[in-house]
Image (tube, rainbow, N blue to C red):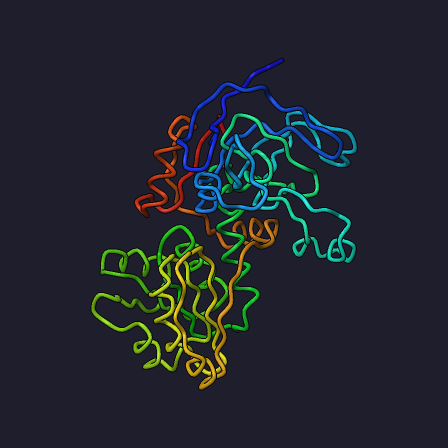
Length: 337
């Protein structure tokens, strides 16, 4: 039985541990992937710290995975050995619930999550179900493609699902792993983009990436500045700070949307009057279409800015991501790409 290197978390709160374990065998409607690159995402904290329903240990994290098909299980249809594929947050669908029977797999009532329900991409090999595979365009290398499978798909999905139209003023809160992609995608979609960040350090980069307006929350009230411009049609919150997010509601225009695409555990404080006065709304968004995101990236030449780590430095990559010190997405390079 062949063996591989993998990163495991053996209990909630335990350290990332590099182990030698058996290479998994693909079953019916599965493929074995030789991992080339895997993005390090805030969602991986679910495995590190626990608390997710049904989560069992030991578990290998990682849900921004790019690699080549090494072996086919039965009923693999048109996928072929050697083909480069990606796997994002979704690890599979039940195919039996009301949503799945209508083809609305994104709304599956019993979904699986990569690297949480199943072992993920912090490893030399992983198994994935064929219905969640995405073909990777030749124009993208595996390292830059990996973050597009979750971070990129999420923020592009949020933009496309909103009510904004070309020329509308929107705001991106935060210029981190999600925010720097959201800014570029929004500009390519023809939107007028205000970036909200703390301090002047990221202003030059934000403007270089296409920001029309930069609001430094250390020296100005972001909501007031947005209202001077007529209010934002939508504000996309990418930095996990519940108070900062709550403070932005008053910067929305009439019928404006506050869309949260980051995980923040602390409660938000928003009064009904803030929403009712201008018919504003607050919602969350997660996920997106990975194929659409990859194709949009190729078309617009928008790729993530990444910091690359070897598999053995997964713990360092995770810590730098969690403390917002990474530039801008951390990616594990597992094998040659």
